Length: 157
Image (cartoon, rainbow, N blue to C red):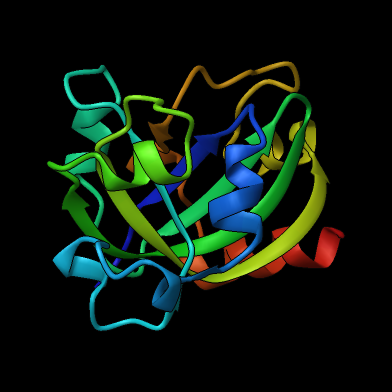
């Protein structure tokens, strides 16, 4: 059973290419084996060896993802498959050679528009709290089910 909540940053148009828009994988016969059974997918990633690798290693299928940019949460989703992209396929094909090789697929993505302060309230962070990079919300800050948190964020929109 999934129980983690991850706050996921983005700051580039690469997010639009692989999360906001679903990628038609039939156009990419060289895609990683982990994506070979899918016709389309949304995916995102982090750099191996970075401080965020620890959080990536804690991701389980079904965990909640809250995507943020500047002062706004722009989407929710669930972790699907996680894998190491040893050939750097995603990086070279979609992300302008950004060194992200720890990949996770994003299931059930929904676009939102929620002020960061509102999400901070859900997790008892200060209004001005600004996550730095990918983080896992500590267990003691997750007072509701993932479904309830996701619903609260979606209803705010």
